[in-house]
Amino acid sequence: MRRIVIAMASAALMLSACGNAAENLTERIVESESGGDIEISDDSIVFQSEDGDATMTVTGDDEGVSISGTDESGEDINIQMGGTEVPEDFPMPIFDPSEVTLVSSFEMASGSSYSVTLEIDPGDAADALAFYKDWIEGESMSMTSSNDMVIGEGDGATAIVQVAEYGDYSEVVMTWTPNS
Image 1 (tube, rainbow, N blue to C red):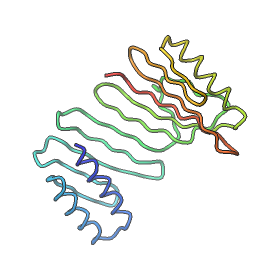
Image 2: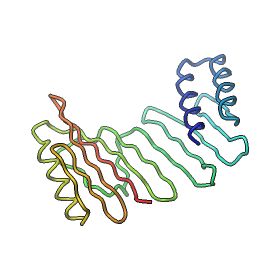
Image 3: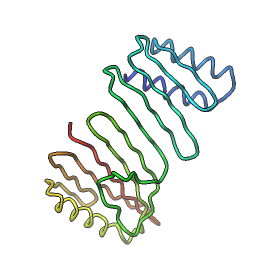
Image 4: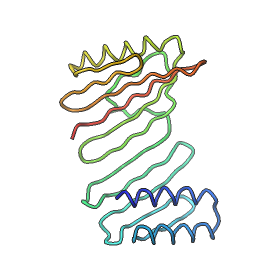
């Protein structure tokens, strides 16, 4: 599956050059590397493994990139990268005041993983970290923390929050991953 993902990423990069020659070359490279079949159109890239067990479709627009398909074992995979809309089932609270700047999700049989990035005022960085420490304690998760990060681990998932300061703004990056 790793070779498929690398091949698909290569295809997406080569397509940025556009044109039929780039499309044909990209298809040949991905097919020779993966042994599968790839079809490239103006709005999607569709891949099927040589034995037909794994498939992937990549689409994109101004809001981000979507990758969906099945892996070799038949498990469904759905990856959304980009955009700013927080999924309704995202289990972590959003610090206020903040602005959501990037959302990614990865859905599979074992559950959904998320990454949500917030932009905050640099003066709110310590308050944001304290907010998430309090939340993790309230969720009865075991906690590890440092000056700029807090990690909570529970029976069902791991939550990681990192706060980074960049001068005139700060970012809070939250990651939620189910334990498998």
